[in-house]
Length: 297
Image 1 (cartoon, helix red, strand yellow):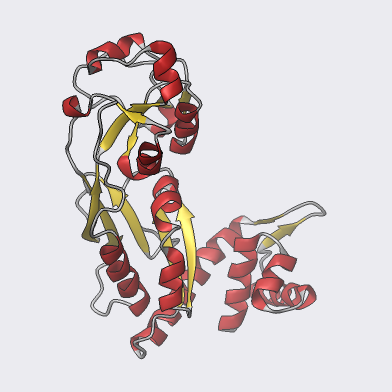
Image 2: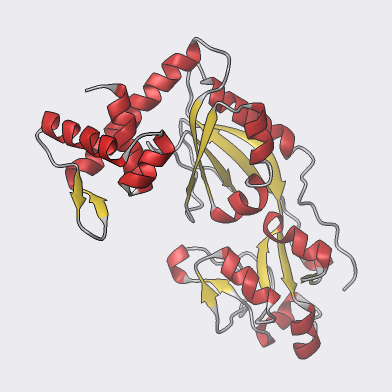
């Protein structure tokens, strides 16, 4: 069993298709298929369940994928220790909204600095700060649980209550948070275990008829005039600046800064790819590019 065979299997699992994996590796689909067959023969286990419509990992394949990622990660780290040039795959865990609105715009500059790095995003709606075999670093916000992870604060963000001009023209502008009980308040669904209104003083009955499990859906609804929303500043700063959304009663809102961290495992010899990313995002977000100074509505 060779390292390149493990790398081929991991790519097939990530792409979910022999042809796509072959294109990304510069191989032929038949060559990739033979590699997987060789692995399965050597292990005496079927790793992939194939059909005419789809391909999925078997339970043994799931376990082997985790082990293969650990082996390849250790190999990349061993290579990197002997070289100051960041290389290999950097896996970044993050909530989708921060990845889309803040990380995506700066990744091209990061790749220009480190062209030998391959970036793999692992997006999750879970706001808990954690790392596993699928990620090397994570971006997390809020209070951090006690753990062995290193947490470097890179920025902060506030929560903003806002609505579209169309909604305010139709329903009127609430004068204070207490008035929100007479308005349509958009919120996260129960499955997310996150209530965006729970910490707002004076809004015991901030409810509405629409919920969603994605912040981007709540943002789209607010833009369309469906209701009032409370979202992170880093998520909606461009909408506030452009006037698509209007901030409500900024003087009465909690201006507490929620810290944003980059997390990574504590290691004596931190790999160059992780160090490069941590240093880069710390510089990129030093001036809090999403900071919005409110204006009277």
